[in-house]
Image (cartoon, rainbow, N blue to C red):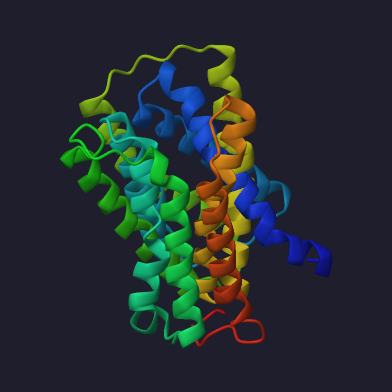
Length: 299
């Protein structure tokens, strides 16, 4: 990848990943969350398979296929399925984003055991500052009543948090070896095998094929599943684990700005301050890893 694109990759990742909240908001009025994910995974499998065929990509080994299937269950099935379902069950987007925002902290706590990475004191300050900034940004959307923090929704989101934390570490450990396009087909199949039964059991299989739904689904498949997820894998393979997942601190920041321009949501001075704190935190984490990519295999 050219050096300019490599330097722009983290910013591009944050900007595009943040659109996932917008596309979910657009599509969920027309179908159940797990139904939407099932469709997304089917089309993503087809798209990656076509990409692999056109590029004459290598086939994964048996070990790579097993790893890919398990990673897919964790990140596509457990993480996306749990978070989408939690929001559908009444957990507001603010609390959901805050719970998922614990990922860099959880990753930092177990990074040495998961991938062999040891954080410096400066990085720990950055990790904590990043979460503080996210909390400030989301504070206006965090209610205190039971409707704001339904138990089932919170539990589902916590399950999703564990899923993406383990999946990111797993992906980091096996990111070398090639055949990634073919492995992505298997990853999405892993997520599909977990999400589809949930859709069949818990949700009506009715879909309103409106223009907003089709456009939102197409965006999820082509931009998020093909483009952004591939970019995330690239960042994990080239950088330290904690530094990469710390970029998720910037997602609520970017989403808040998008919501301001697209949906007219208010941005307070305190939220702007929180954005600055989050950005400083991410800079501290990522700058401390420049020239040091950790000791994880495949880094």
